[in-house]
Length: 142
Image (cartoon, rainbow, N blue to C red; front, side, top):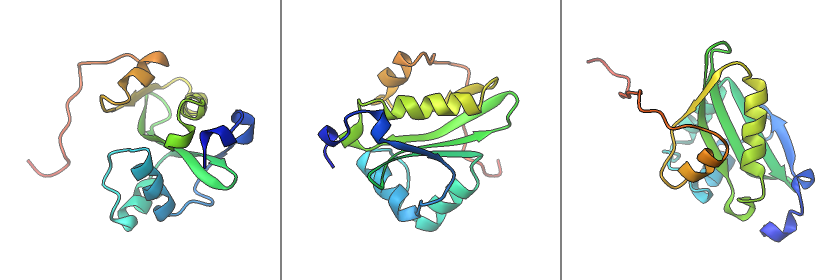
């Protein structure tokens, strides 16, 4: 697919839920985006999505071109786990549209995300602020 094929966001079909998704389609998009996640274990990929609070997808001519995955308590915090957009449609507003839909559905919560240096400018342009008060540890017994 070429970006020239998508004339505007009206050509993109946005959906909520897992219908039409497969672990292979998700993994392919993550690799293309590139979204640096371990996606070789398709069973784990599917578990990630089944256990998510919210999954939003963007499709163009039946092809998955964008995805957002969220965990939320619905009150205080929402965590945007993943945002992936196919390179051919990046800079056309697909990622922004997905985030706007996340913000609508998670209204009233603080939306938190982790990003790479590759995408930090994108989030800053959308009004996200970098925070220093976070810690992370892989869940295991200490």
